[in-house]
Length: 304
Image 1: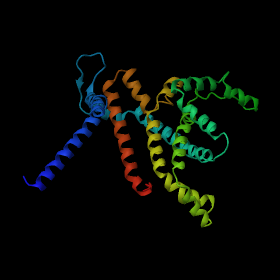
Image 2: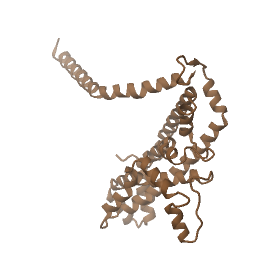
Image 3: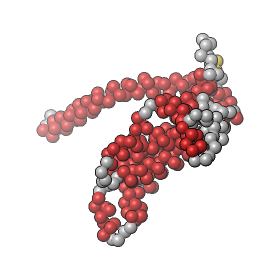
Image 4: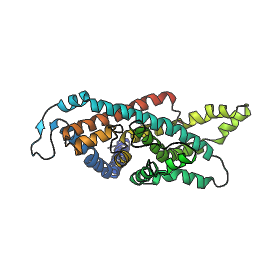
């Protein structure tokens, strides 16, 4: 073996050792994902082809029947429509509101740290505790919200007990709880924008709107992309508040896909149907995320 061959062999051996070391570091995480995520998804996919009530020792193979029945089910179709309405309402209100809060909290004024902490507090409150508190506040007879309305001459309202207002009330509670979280994300993005870019626009005589349009929006686009993706996932997976406050009612007006899945699986024991819904939800979230990543190439600006 000459000197050049010896150097190549030594280089390959070094790269092999480096790669093996990297795989050893990711092996625990990969094992965890394999057991608790990938294996779980495969088992749910397997169950979606069977009819089973959790009691019978022998599930019955039915092929695609669970998927076909689910698509034809009127209750499922209504749950899908409610979920889209809930998702559009929560994301469409929360993100613009969070961006406004972030722009206001990005000012270097006295006491700003306290305000930032206060706006983040709702997010750290456990969802069930927050739901119970809002259940008291929105109670139609002695709730604080109706009491304040009475003080200003308005009549009270059955916020969570009326089919027309129950889902809107849940959207409001979501906005209250998650606005602080997304505000902190936007605030982090704003503080990473170089001040020199704003100075350049000012030198050219640009207004506040010009700074926002030509600097803030493009530089904040990666954060906006992440928040839209996360808000959609949070909205579709929302369950705690619905379970505690309305239990899917009144008249199924707050039964979203996740709650419909819960009813099929753990109230009616239609495990195959519940598994089929889970797989469709997974496919929907994967498709939405994939389309967002593809579309992000046109509007997300990555700073080099």
